Length: 75
Image (tube, rainbow, N blue to C red):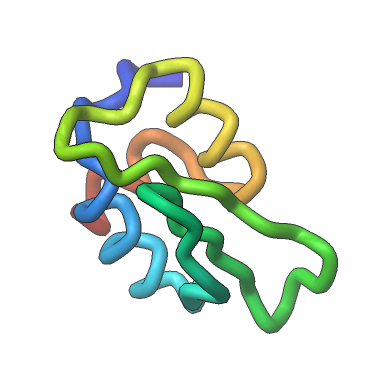
């Protein structure tokens, strides 16, 4: 796996929308996203104005079934 990009939460939300994810709801500074084709799977993205931490980003990508290369392409 290649190195994860540094990406802020709002850009990550935009990138995931391109892959069919939609915003289910927002709670404080966290956006909860779902996908029609993946029932029961939800992704929680922190939107704090700072880059998402590498461990958090890695977990988000695993749930979304995306690689680092794919997310770089979507950004």
